[in-house]
Length: 63
Image (cartoon, rainbow, N blue to C red; front, side):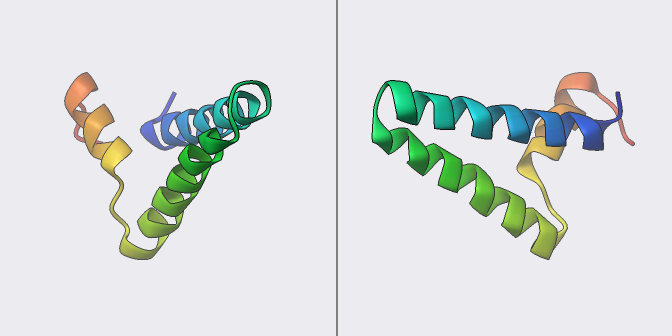
C-alpha cells in the first residue's frame, strides 16, 4: 500500500471511530472528528501532512 493510501485509510478510520465513540460514549468525541478534518484541510492547502512525516519515519521510506 502506498503512503498516500495509508494516510487516507488512517484518516477515514479515525473519523469513523470518533463518530462511533461520539454516538456510544460521549458527544465530545466529535472534537476529534473536527481535528482530523481540520488537518485534512490544512494538508490540502499547505501540501504538508504530519501523518506523512510520521509514516515516512516509521517505515523509513523516502517516497
